[in-house]
Length: 345
Image (tube, rainbow, N blue to C red; front, top):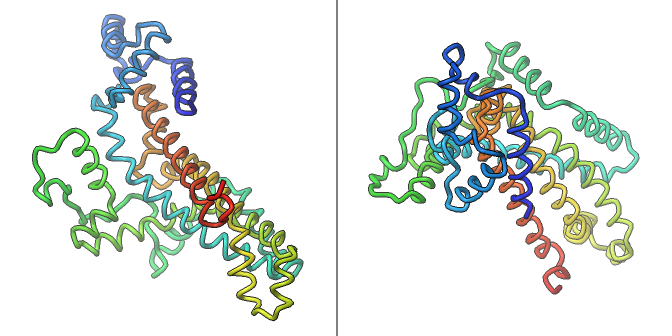
């Protein structure tokens, strides 16, 4: 239901935007005859309801259509770009979660102290910082000001020049793959970190991780700040519960009280906000990938918008929406690991 609603809204909005993709693609060569042929070839001459019904039928068969700009199946383009966005999202969320939880616990255990105030002020600043501005500042500092120092970090791209990786289908000598098998092998092949580890090219692994630092920090800063604030709030609430005071009265070490008893019950709100922030992180990836020339799905969406590539844009947004639904489903299922009462309901 959610995905159908997103598809409908995206479909209507993309076709409500002024501008004909024919004039964008053909430029000065866009005569009326050529544009009529162009719109007919991509089915854009039919009423929007008819186009939507036809599109839903194609989606049900696993066919996302053919890109107007690239003249290639949208599924193949997504298979190339999606792994890059997944890598960025995973490492950014890992950075945000680890740093956010540590800062939140540190702040809660030192409530109303100078360290607490400093941490929360920093979290508020982190929430307020635009992703694109932070990305530009990070690139300016680490790629320009520190260019000739050991602290230099590449500001763009996925791998340094001179480093290449094979396609896994060729590396494993795989043949006669079906459509589904080809899609997943292509998906894995375009994950630079996975492919470099599998093929034993650890130089490429190090280089890929080095290129990942700045965009992961840029897109992960806002989730980090939100997670830190939620961790502090949730832990403070739990620390005021009777069972925590009882555990302290029994003489248990403070570390055991906090991490074994209090944190277990404080995790549910934290996990919930991590799931919600993953969706926000995917939205932030659109700006971050543009700033750092990251060859992911977010940057592809920007190009599809400017090219009026409706079909590619719809497929990319559908994948983002599906990822958000899957992440929140995983979050819901994980509640049972932190609260046994959930598994008994």
